[in-house]
Image (cartoon, rainbow, N blue to C red; front, side):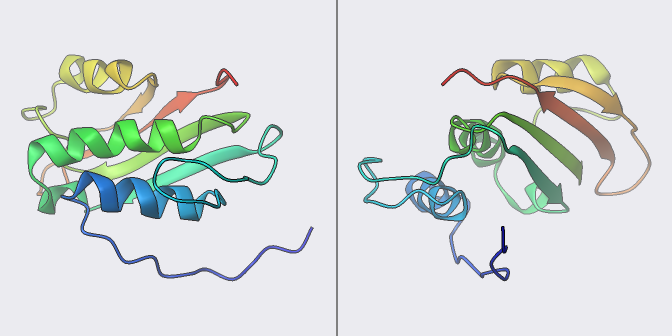
Length: 133
């Protein structure tokens, strides 16, 4: 299968509707915001979301919502991972438990956790290996 070139999808990530729309478009869903329309078959695909120094610039509610919207965008996929080097919302310092809760609430399981000093102080990966169709 030939992959398309990367495409810039402009969205204000503090705006839930714009974020959801951009994620649906990136995942290949065709149709309006209500989700009506066709999508390419993603059942055998594992979707990987990469978030690097992005949530730093979002308010906490929008950053939390972004993780959930990624889960929703990959709902038809065979699995999903969320890899990050960022500042997670509601996670003070290097505490793992609030990070586990953030991802668990969004249906992911925190697999790797590597806190470090600095603004983008949380690094790791969360996985959602089997998504219900």
